Length: 237
Image (cartoon, rainbow, N blue to C red):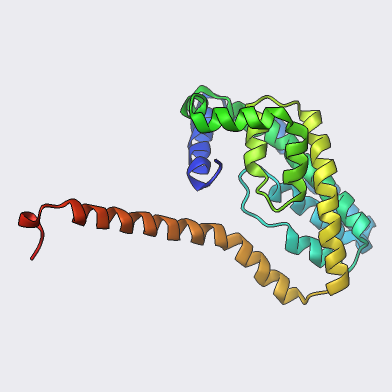
């Protein structure tokens, strides 16, 4: 549903939407500046919480709708210095900020006619949305805690106009115990930093490697099918 193909469509729709509706830099720049200044001040006055503050900040882009960034290695790393409870609260805060940004930034794009017309009448969307609407809160909770990819459910929430406050509550209920679980594992296992960096890089590149493998497989199958259907008289000798 929300694989690389969809993400490219979302990107180009965002480009078209931005051309028709200029980005409100007068709101974005002050907000970004406020976040940056607040982060610097918090680190300055609370240096012992530096890694936790940076993790909270990092949790925002890792939970944006189409972000490929993994959050698990960062949680495990922070568990070396802070309690699982503090980490889970910090992660939930970053997740909620990301959810707010998703609704503010991507809702106009996903519901824009240039993109919505591509999926609105397709069977996969109708069936997925109908199933999701039977219990949207609990679908989000399950996806938030389990290894299931979260972005398809975020997409359905935005496309189905699920209320933001309910979405945020579902994220808190589902994501907070997930953060706590990873933080507790990190506290108990204490893996070396180099291993966490390696794990993060692998989690980052694996989706792209899988995409390349899938494209190669599809192309190979297409070539084989073409050869098989070519008449013998015109096949290369």
